[in-house]
Amino acid sequence: MPETGRTLAPPPADRAADTDRAADADLALLTLRLGDDALILGQRLCQWITRAPTIEEDLALSNIALDLVGHARALLARSGQLDGTGRSEDDLAFGRTDRAFRNALLTELPNGDFAVTVARQLAFTHYAVLLQQALADGTDRELAAFGARAAKETAFHRRHADLWTERLGLGTEESTRRMRAALEQVWPYTAELFDEDDLTDRLVAAGVLPPLAALRTAWQASVAAVLDRAGLTVPTPTWQGRGGRQGLHTEAFGPLIAEMQSVRRQFPGGTW
Amino acid sequence: MTARTDTTAPLRGAPVAVTAPRLDVARVRARVEAVPDPELPMITLGDLGVVSAVTTADDGVLTVELTPTFLGCPALPAITAAVQDVLEECGHPDGRVRHVLAPAWSTDRITAEGRAKLAAHGIAPPSPAGAASGPVRVDLGVPCPHCGSRATRPHSSFGPTRCQSMLRCTACRETFPTMTAI
Image (cartoon, rainbow over all chains, first blue to last red; front, side):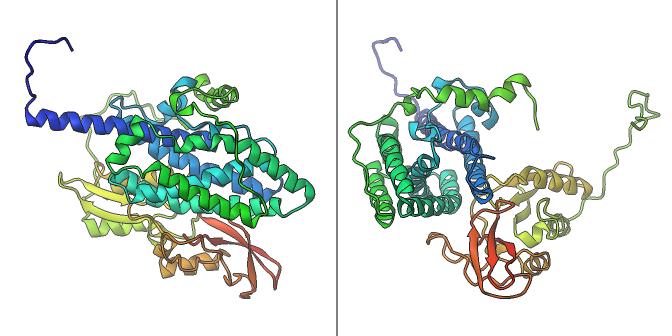
């Protein structure tokens, strides 16, 4: 705005409207981040379908993916309402380019061997349950309802990851070796889940989000307990992978969304 | 292919709006609750406990609130469409169907009748879900719907639909689904 030499205070009603708009914009970005986490991890897990070690595991991973896509639908639909563009969840999932996605890099990591998928699930599910439970106590009513509902579902995903972590950790020499390697590979990407920035600072101040440092402490204790039961140790990475929250993704991300968006590209506007 | 009615033919006289008589809220609710679940057709939406409220909104429009069993439940669009059809049949073509997340659905909302119908179809009814924020329940001692033995054990938390999990009976060795207590 050009300087006019005098400052006119806007009428109170307008100030309130401005505050509401800013709060909506923050919530739109938060639901975009969380919705993208769920969408991208769900898409990744779908790649196990017909390739999982057993039929039960095929069903487990696809059911977890189904829940995640359900979470993504709720979150992205809300994001499209709040950001003023009126975009639907499908518009956001299938109509954006890679730089517009805001998922943490952890969720897009390739599935690797089964141990890598289990390590990624362990890190993500413990984070997601704690976050969703905290959202349930937060000040945004719709996110609170979502958090309460989603935490009940994610608790099942967490138990699935816990049981596999123990089974692989305490299994054979080979399964232990692979689980250790998987943890080393995945752990550098866990820090980004708890990164603070201006957006999270405002949302914490507004009581929507819990303080992320406290969330991280709770998460560390939570995963350490499982790793301890599994005879494994918490990795101490010497580097950290981040960038997803700013739209900077790994090399594996492009092919993932190319496949995810291919049907919509071939049949624009199609519904099913 | 069957012959199609020619919809371009001119209508004789003014179109007559065929609207069913508008039923009151209680009767609409009864009709909505009688809709069978698309994935578990042996039970109704009322048995399942997903019809949260049927009310007349402030603007006078009849509104049905549904709570999804799971956020990603693939049956939800089919359920929504079926309820919309019922509203039309009940004389409320303008009726609304809303999805509400709070309070979250729980297997404790399945009615006694619903539980009996599930058991009759080989799906063990859920045990009480208990506190909302506790650890995930492990289904122990769920009676086998085939032989009645309680010597059953969890097999997989995930089953043929999102709301079911699998158990195995150590007495008759059958594998059977149960509604996951949530």
